[in-house]
Length: 257
Image (cartoon, rainbow, N blue to C red; front, side, top):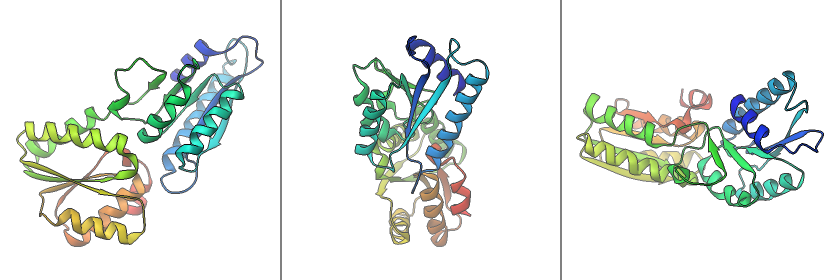
């Protein structure tokens, strides 16, 4: 994060301004906000380190923060607002779906967006204003597919995915399926669910296990992955259960047990 921030502000900072302004727009409250909070903490630490070392060409860096509350339209409005406020670059979005939707708001502005966690391959190998410091979903999906098939000997898999982040989930499932079948797996079924109450997780768990798969992959944020894992385990305590990189946060343990 520190290297990416320093690179961006060095290239795009305007010499006439007293400070260098960076924008941070993410979901900081509500469901699934743990990634946004983690990104915020990293951005603050990076800015503090840069300023402690003298800033950029002697100018201090200031982080302008906005909370989009999970609302994509609000995120786009806040990006426009911070562009007007003089931001030379943005950190975020944290979710692939948000990055895909928000990035067009920066086209033609000369302002880049650096995402710590966006993993969709929809934004890979393009000449645009998007930078990432995390590999796209093909790396993790391919390795998990080969592990499930070759190391675990699982023949039939279900991927149950949160539909609120399809820009990540759809290419992830597609790549997982291709590598899994190529490694000797027989079938991959996909099931979609959306954020909701415990009843939603209960229904998704029943649907997931209906075809008696050998293993299940959950594509969701940390909280939803933990909740869904709990419901799946109530019906089948022995089934092979996996989560994707989207769930790698503390809420997975808090809600998954």
